Image (cartoon, rainbow, N blue to C red):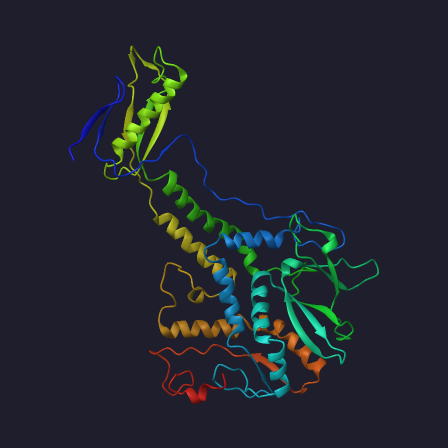
Length: 434
């Protein structure tokens, strides 16, 4: 197509190449950053608030939802705690099938697991623990004082009732669907007694609070990953920066500056001046629509001044060279990912996120990392969470020698695992136990 010369005014001309592409013209600054409040508003004297405004969980949830990897890290942590599920054992007989002990089949335990859907309950427990390091479980006992029901209550909906002047222990929990939000209504709160270990079936329904007792935290624990808050904020800003940059920033190729009195023509009404301005900008948009790499054009208006005895040029068109490099941001993003994985207690090789290097290296390294993760970085968490099974054993009268543990995930790597190992998929018969 032959370029077409278009005259917009007596001082402005454009060269038109094509009309196939559109050009976005912006005036001033545009803020496309997402912002939202974390809630808050419900801070009463009858319960222990979680955070200064009772919005600590909401704040961390919002931070996680804006992150590209926070939920994945929490789920990875959950997955390693869950392993391949809970099993029962007796004694200290060890083997090498991903189990610490030799499993036994107990019909009472297996029937109870199915009745209360324990596998699903346990998965929910582990995710709650990975998010907040607290788990609230509603226990239901029948008339025979047996534990017949388990229900995980979301930490967002539970608060500890403040102990009374003569109470030396937590005696009750408050359950409300809108804690930490502006929709909180005290009338919707249910009071549920705390589980009494000395008399497990004292209440037909009670709440068991599982957590690690951290120094200085008398009521609620907090997850290790909460300490990565600032790193998460940094990570979350990088994609927002690039998103805003693509829309408004670093792909602007041309800068057109027009004198502020350019459209002040004698004899023109305000409506005519605005129409002239609109026609001029539209002509520029049509002109540069087909220019290669034009992408976006920035149009501004400058004040008319005199340089010596000469007036400043009318319309100025300057190409803009984008010298921004992604290297610095990529390095920062990868560094933040490693710091966050460490905060979640997940080895970087197993984090399931791109840290800028090889994911685990060789199969042997990956296998060693998975074994270390399960053997050392999940043991305490599992010990805390499995406490509910010890309560069930006592209440339901199961075999006193029965103990509980979790199946580890035994990896089989084709390049390093010996052919006779139980992890080898060819030895399926020997794998049934784990």
